[in-house]
Length: 111
Image 1: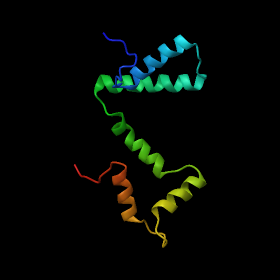
Image 2: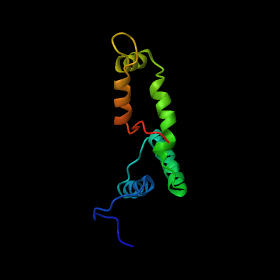
Image 3: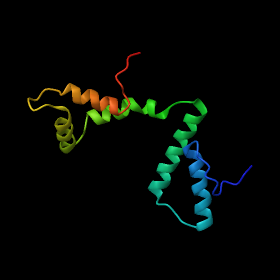
């Protein structure tokens, strides 16, 4: 196979990036903080599962991400959500919600 050095090769998944970073860290002797190693290992595991199963991790994570976005845990987060989605009269600004959904890739298309 060809060397990965410099040829403008595109990575098809996160695991390839981790392999390249591991090679660099070995060659240049730098260390990552433990929390970064944990995050990288977690993402590598998820990426491996996605590649092996053909799953789209964005689609799988969407319900959880939507739930978290629509149920902020802090007062500041709740205030921002209200500011973003409620009209001045306190009702839901449906046009804004639909536009936000479309911009996030939801598109509002049915099954």
